[in-house]
Length: 126
Image (cartoon, rainbow, N blue to C red; front, top):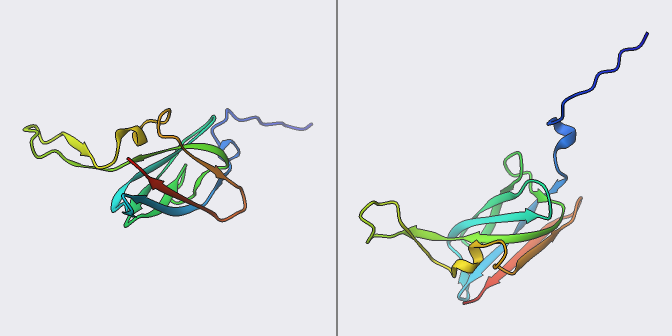
């Protein structure tokens, strides 16, 4: 007699294929000092990473630094600072054009390849 077990999903086998991503983000001809970058695949879980001194680091989908989903991704970039005029202390000011915050307006894309070094570079313009 054999026993067959089936799971309910959500395990390691359900994790998306990801690959390490590095690169740069330039704004006004200089490295973007700090911010956040996100990779949005056609379907499935998005990934996000940090921008430090213009370098894209620690892109994460499920485990810190595991990378972005393999395939075509739309990209968004956020860079803000506190709005000193906001009495609540909760307001922020975007340091780059706000269209880069919108997945449907940024115009930024990246093709992430599995088993490859993925270096993506973005030169943001006004």
